[in-house]
Image 1: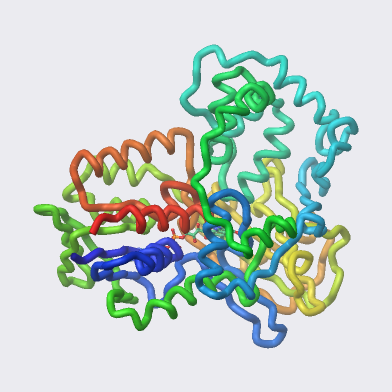
Image 2: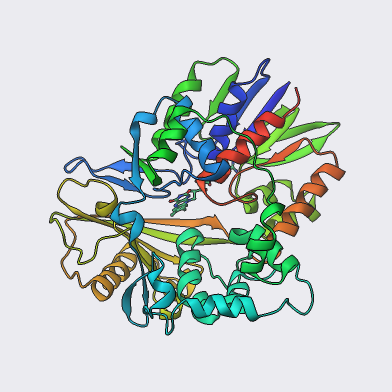
Length: 472
Ligand SMILES: Cc1cc2nc3c(=O)[nH]c(=O)nc-3n(C[C@H](O)[C@H](O)[C@H](O)COP(=O)(O)OP(=O)(O)OC[C@H]3O[C@@H](n4cnc5c(N)ncnc54)[C@H](O)[C@@H]3O)c2cc1C
């Protein structure tokens, strides 16, 4: 039997890794279109300062089953000594800022915000809680709605505008008015629908909690819990995870990992898949796709247009990442994780991450600006040159943080179509997609960021489930 894995990002590579842990493994071939493994996970170390620049993901959260699964992978790969934890008591875990109403506002991080008015909010958050308690159920039961509508309906528009919308920009560079409530709050939403409120749902639905997938806790996982890690980064960058997987599997004769091998078409015939790679036919008894949904759609379009249409309907956004290093310590007035920009400010940038507050950056101030996202075309139109992206980032830093100096080192990366958007109806769409695959008995598993979560933790968990679920 041959299993073909399409895409050599973290999803494809972790699928291979989890397959390698199973008995009687079939032959596994991975095909990656580009000349490197890792996909969006990409880190570089500046030669002069030793500072790590991340082009894609940079922080991971160690919580929940998905968080523990990544910790487990890191430990199995023998790179647990490279973890740089940020504890809950650290300033970067406590101080989260939002730029709204033309100023930087420190988000409430304790009970004080409940009884005091803290800008950008015009009243204490206690009133938002009251609104939830006294607002009844929606008139008709809802299958889904936008995360913005849900929060505005339960807690008021201010919370939706200044607390939730910037967070959605930070997580998926998306517009909270389009993103499904189930993206972040699936369980809360379902209980709200059942019990008529978020607070009521939390109290009355305490026992409804679905049992979590049991994970055998290792001492490393317990360390994360006992020491109260809020998040962590990897010394030398997150790319060490895919790199280490490649190293581990390179000499394993069951696995073949191919670079510069773009899949051009997939067809299914007599329980077999035929994959066209650089003009040659590669038969496989099973295919695991970790490709972006729009790429997979093009590959199967001829034979399965209905499935292709569903996959095409998952939108993606462009995000520019601008890494900046100033050879001066303490340029930041307030320390913290960073500042997210409320979309109501109508700025081209989505947020600024204060890297040098989170990890040691050798006496430099290091910042990362995320730009564009759902509003990329609106702000950059046809001119998305590095100069324009850098200039928008520096304007934003000047306006928001009052830093007017030129960075000593900078990198500009434009990541086209890099984050899938789980818009209203996404979950139902994914169910239809999986039903189509199952009804048509296609030997195809769907992994990667398009389906079951957009973060690194989510795709690793999904790869683990796919690898463990494969029958051979
Ligand atoms: C700017 C940015 C910041 C992020 N920050 C965070 C963060 O801080 N924390 C977090 O948890 N997550 C973050 N994420 C999300 C995280 O990066 C993704 O969840 C993860 O990298 C997705 O991995 P993947 O393997 O599913 O997809 P990808 O990385 O997209 O991998 C897919 C691979 O398929 C290859 N490919 C494409 N077409 C073909 C083809 N025809 N044939 C063969 N191969 C093909 C591509 O070259 C690519 O290598 C961020 C993402 C971005 C873009």
